[in-house]
Length: 330
Image (cartoon, rainbow, N blue to C red; front, side, top):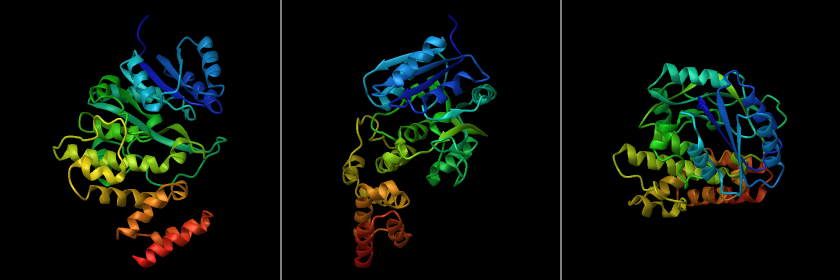
């Protein structure tokens, strides 16, 4: 059988609620020369049955049903299985626009120096309702991407990306340590070996809802993002990457030892704390303690009295009082 032009990589864990719409949006693409690799990562709901049903109905669907190993292991397994030179990522709760693959294949064909292309996205809620976007759209060309890296801004929406498989494999695929921010770490590593960009069309409908990973693991995600950027700075400055072979990331207090110099832990805690102050989920979990430690160390207080007010709005009066007391003392 001839190899497909695209391998679509979708990992699923307990995704039955939105999975049929996600699969159908892939199968309904105007560019139809693809294989859809769907890996069920040990789901305990009806996801596996849904995947099998679509595989029986469409020969382009290649199912993998196995025990739970986590998203990063699943993505690397899918990369290894892919038969096509191009890999399109897709999540089990999002929806592709019908022309997504056609637009991205055309871009990569016309720009052989680009190894990665994403697209802008449209935010939707759990019932498919349109949500008001906030913040800037993702950068378009590689030079804008490099500037966004320097500024700590968003780069590429992971489920909207298409990349050249050999380029991603050349940097080792997804790194195990960066749970919940594996995509950012990958973009940062790829930025030095290939050009990256985004198509200025909303080719993906990106679903936002309380139970998604980014909402449930916001503190861990932000800690990982800060460490990924620290590792990128080491590589940029010509130093070895101390995170390259880690299976898990260390605690913030261990970063001085990992990077071999003092001050890294304190700087990382400040970056994490100031980013988490906006997150209701983080202010209800361990992120709040990181913020308190940052204040006690005499760190920057930008907008932290407003965070006290937000904690009250979040229904956290005790935490609001603790933060106010720490701000008053330090």
